[in-house]
Image (cartoon, rainbow, N blue to C red; front, side, top):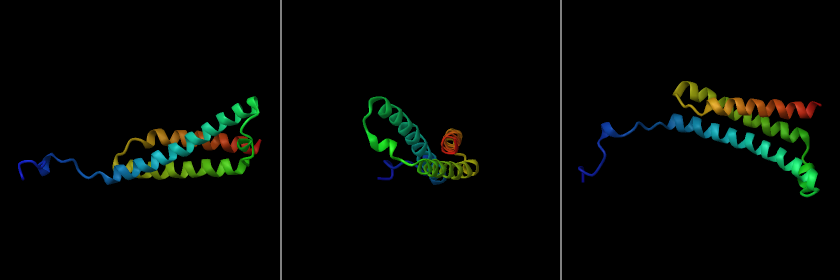
Length: 108
């Protein structure tokens, strides 16, 4: 049975820190991309006059959702810098742009 197992030196390290950072980055990307999807649905629903629930979402709820995505991206960045994960490099700018756009639309 020992001949079938992968030797210890050939096994990859248990990079749970990288996986932990990546999970925060994926969650941040999910928040950011859902905001963009909701924006696209809003413009489609306005032009087609369907799905009125999209236009009933209050602006401050979008800002809170974008801020949560930014917080997740910041946690992913902090963990990624220390443990070497790479997905935070995508999650942070996307979350920051999403938050700034949501805040801009809320204020104006």
